[in-house]
Image 1: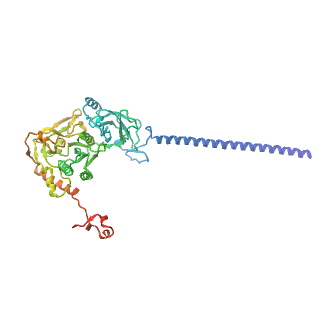
Image 2: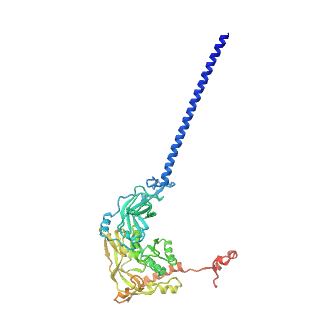
Image 3: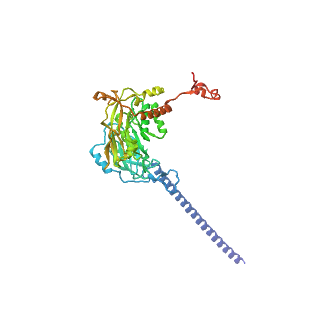
Length: 497
């Protein structure tokens, strides 16, 4: 009995030890599995953290190798995604070189096309235009002519596009020609061996000039506006004169202008028949020495947007005396005519223009085309042109200097038209002493009576609209408002005060 009980206890003890050992092995296995799982989690977390740090590094650097997302315009439409660039059809283009690059290099080698003026002037970006095949960037410095320049391209987020730079040169004058790049919306330039931090030029937007055909048949590049003499009335006469000739758009360049004169420019821009280029340079004032920059900037601004462009200063009026009208005459030109040149005569101007509008009687007494009619004979001494911008490579002040291959310039007979140039005799002004060197005889000439009548009406209407202004009358203010606020706050006067 005793021996049986003892055997039974031993068996039970062995079974207990085996069970405890199995349980211990099981717990150890579970522990190792948990430890391995935690290790894998830590590894994954560390790997993800590393990737995030790497991505944040590239984002903070905003380096040129950044990958970007373009949303392309397509027939089914597209949606704008955050921080991505929508690229319309016209901007889905990349070109390898500049149009007419061989001709540009040949002309640049001659040394023509430059004007080393204002030698210490800063080379600031003025404007940039994108055309069907290339891009033109205009700067404010003429002394960079012929220098090596690097075209730089930026997307809609102003991030430089990777591997897009192009080595070019400044020609003509202050213009850098660049090929196109897919999705580029902003551009900048660097010169020679400039370091990034040395003189960074913040990119400027590309102005679209990619059109199937020109928007305007006939436009005007208005010479630069500067100097002390008031120009509000002269501007109105000028614009309304050319509107009667059939022009539909005006490109103004503002060097220096007071607030009163600026109002009329603003009104023409409001109507959608004008735009103006503003200059921000290190100089307090700009004058005739910067005229050629204006000539070229307006030339490239009007390119592909206007078929024909009248290139005249604010004191010059084209007189058309041919059959039908000016636009009909231009339509009759052969397709290889890139410029038509007109003869000029000078009109003696003896007084300054009025500084402000006072009354209708004052207005009619100050209209230049009525007040000044003593003129020189018509001559070829100083030509003025109407130009096809895409057919001409280089301009002087008022006519083209280089035309592309096969393009011709035609001189317009005097019986068809000429330019009336209102020249003052202020000896402090540029060429203000012209009468001292003139040995001819002045005679009285006028515009045609029908044209004068139309011009008088047009000028009067515009002057009255913009400049015939008055203060607020207290009688116009309702009683509940005038009783609530003091007179000083209402800024009004009674009619008979």
